[in-house]
Image (tube, rainbow, N blue to C red; front, side):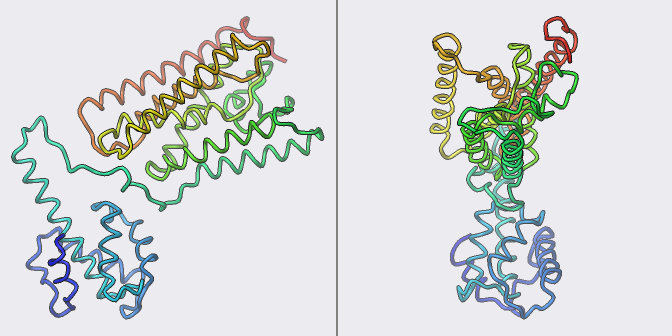
Amino acid sequence: MREKEFMALRGTTSTSRLTRRQLPPIAVRHLRVAEEFWSKQYADKNRAVPLVVVKERLMQTRDADALPNGLVTQLLRKADLNQDGYLNFEEFMTFAEASARESRSRQAFNRAALSVVPRGERTVEKRSYLQEYKCCPPALFMVTAALVEIGVFIFYVYDMGKPITSNGPAPLYSPLIYNPYRRYEAWRYVSYALIHSGYMHLTMNLVMQTILGLLLELVHGWWRVGLIYMSGVLAGSLSQSLAMPRAYLAGASGGVYAIVYAHLGNLLLNWSEMEFRWLQLVLCLGLSVGDVSMALWDTYGSSTPSNTGHLAHLGGAVAGVLVGIYILRNLKKRRWEKYCWWVALVLYFILIGTGIILNASLPDYFPPSE
């Protein structure tokens, strides 16, 4: 909105405010919703409410999705006439009028743009990825997963009664760890993610999943990130069980790698909306090359190979890319992406289904059950 238009709105009062007959029906509804919102949240119209509180509650409403979060914040600050950090009812309605005008101008712009663009090439207004970051609802999945993993680790530290080093020991007797001799206990293909072998194993996983997971969760929501994480955990255990049928498996690395490589799927979906897309792509590719090189050296070049489940990492990474492409938010939908979504979903279920069938139909390949 132009500064002169907004300054004119700032000088309005309830008696001189733009009459609703001059507004289109959608803007009239916008103002009615704004009045209902204020009446529901704050019965006293003479009360001044902190700007931060108004913004937090407003962002939880469905009508706030019509405008980018950054623009809503900007309009709220401009509506604070005396810049005291509080809004009264008059100032809030000034914000409502400004946002109604902004919504109307955006719709008019989109209609005008569509009228001159060929039907097959029509697109919506470009959205910035950074504007999609929001803290409401809060990002709880990654934090909750980290706390649960820390709690399980502390429990087994005391239960084993042994000194804990950077690399072990792991509680092989735990009903949560993946035990190749008890494969019929199907929950172990997922619950192994709660067990860690040593404090370095735990710390590395927590740091990576919390930082990179929160970056996704603040834009795409906790349930999408949770599904990606769990799909990586399952894919990791199935991959490792087929590659090393007699090996135990512990750690959240499958889920962590799913979160890491879901950023590649996110780049594919929202490339044009990303502000630092080339930097992210270089970092993701550099991480991939480094991780593959380390896995090959550890497996074939090292004189003392570690017990790292590299196939679990690979399974989690593949799951992260495929499920991420299908489930993450797409800010600007394109026709070719629909085919990409279905290919990713079908391919993921084919791989998971194949892993489950092989685990169930090759009893002689695995050690006998206890």
